[in-house]
Length: 301
Image (cartoon, rainbow, N blue to C red; front, side):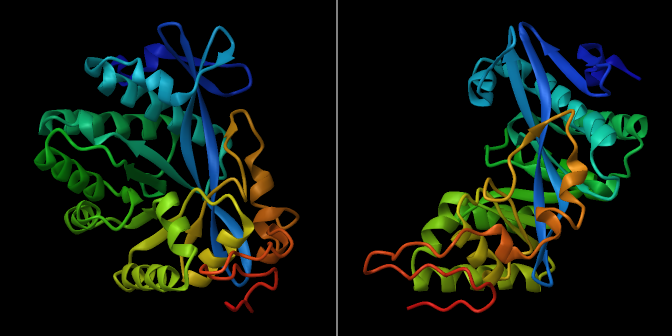
């Protein structure tokens, strides 16, 4: 395999995990389950790859690590982290689960870089034995250096069997433009935005309408960053396809037993009501009453 894809900076551990080396940092993969709604049940059908840096054995916040990466090195880091996630996904994730991989659009400065990234991805997938149709390429909210190069790259990803997700969708015109231009398979709604909409009846009605519009176009929706049970309940009621957040499962660093999320004896196979807390306290006047624990039979007061 070509060293251009970062294999020279990857160490295969005895526990079957792969770690990366970047200067004084060690990079590990963590995966957070993404759950789908089906017949009143939650099922883990996908996992998002997240990088976990450390320095001399001490964890370093990802934001701090990436802030210390020079702009000229962003593409190499992008390639290294993507390679790590795909190798670890092959080793630890269920073979039928989708794999969400983040892409930083700011590194795609021209079409040649996009083509190189695509070539490297094909190489890694062949090495890992992963079907490209399992991979969801998640385009982050960062502004691309060249929109033309990004659109060309996204088109090439689709042509090679990859799916596209747009991250951090809100109500801004720029977000709507991204959807129109990229034509994604999946839209991930911004956590803070959906939380605000859920706080009022009018906001929740808007949220339901937007979800329905996407679903009618064949675009699946993900509510991410859910931290409270009432948000999970309203996400199901809104018609969202999938949910992700601490209320369901934390990211876990490999090696980890992700099969616990795919069996009937655990959270992914139990009733959605069982994943929620008791009925929340009364919401102050002027906000919608949050739903109680009776899943599927909730009303606002």
